[in-house]
Image (cartoon, rainbow, N blue to C red; front, top):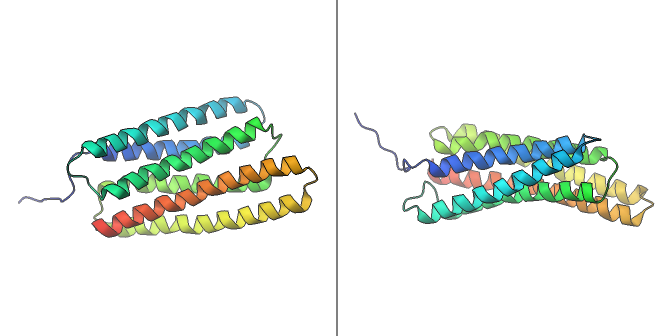
Length: 209
């Protein structure tokens, strides 16, 4: 008895998705490590920079492969948006990390620690979800996990609002407040992009299950 699948057997794109997921998780974890390290932050920053370059390479490789693929496993726009949003998160992590170091911030606030942990959890969930795209026979498992990202994004929004309110209420240094606001905004954008990734994946599940 033969079974057929509408999804092409070419696994190169899926392998690239998996590699993007690895970089996504590693970047968020490295950001957490950088914030919790008093000494040797340059080591973590260098690691994040390398991951950002790797992320760019994976995104370009995916888009080039997609351009050469006659029969893509999913909607081409969804694939393009998925890898671009993953790269966006990695870029935002890189930007927040650079500013934290360049601005010579002595130590992170509790709010930034909380946000980095929200981001790390969101990236971990997304990283675990991405391999499920290879087989959408049990879409409900993926849907449930993706709903967690929306809940985390709401936590991130609440944290960001509280952090900015506290910053403006307590800061006596306008320049330092501007630096902190920028770091908070970038980190919050990274969490928002995680929700974008979840939305793209939800669309893929809806169209292909």
